[in-house]
Image (cartoon, rainbow, N blue to C red; front, side, top):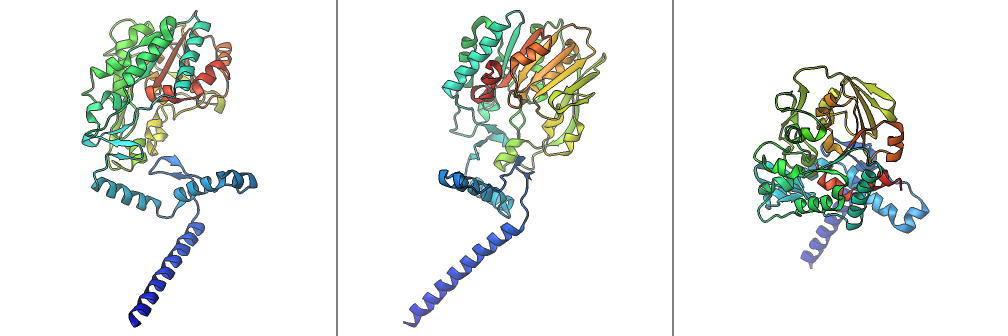
Length: 384
């Protein structure tokens, strides 16, 4: 009887301590100010949701509250590191959707296209090329790292065949555009540093190889191999895949820029919707932040109008995602003006752009994952 009483008292005490700890954690969570951004994860954190009758009845409030509590939980980074460490000890080869490959190579999974969106994007680009048939339209889809570096995937891991997806896009676009086989160019050099280990972007070296092999298609004569000099602007880059997965956070990589070896490369970059101008393609202040890849143009924006001192009379339109940011500087010596549009941030239509600028050439450049999933591409071309 005494044993049962002691056991009951012990269990009651444990229960009270547990409830007390819960209240203590809740109190600390309410006392500690919310954070707007996680530097470790390189993303904006959820803010406290607004309470309304509509959000309660639809269930949206509870979903938003759970996301908010998950993001703002005190000591979240410590618990996150502990979880990742335990997962790694257990042999996990994926964290938060990121493959942990051989030699520490982090790889984003190849996105499975949504058939409807995929077809809409292809049709939108084709329709644009046919509407403006008097200007050459070039399409370049950059394969993602898991496609080219498939040998670095964890054992038994497999991804979608992105090359086959690209072939379907090429067939869908037909003769309306100039298609560039970026996959073959990169695949022939896959033993080199084409992608960052901790980030989903390709390196500037990878972009240069593609530029060198495709220069003739842009009307650039001769071999451009010696026309650019590379400079390391940072050797402490740690990318978004490390932030997303919590793996490889101590890995440091270099970012390079390529500048013309000779000639005048002066530019004026007008960030149209932000009403500001700069005289450089690069934003060195970003090298002091975690998002160091944003050194190219300061990151993504809706519309940029780049005016150069090139003797060329050509004006290029570039419709793109962030993969194009390190590629565009190779083109500035060869165009009088380059207008850059990122549909993810642009609220207008391509007709607005074509009516405003005297475009002579167009380049559509995306990573494979973005092109097959992004619902902004078809909208900016069709105006819907």
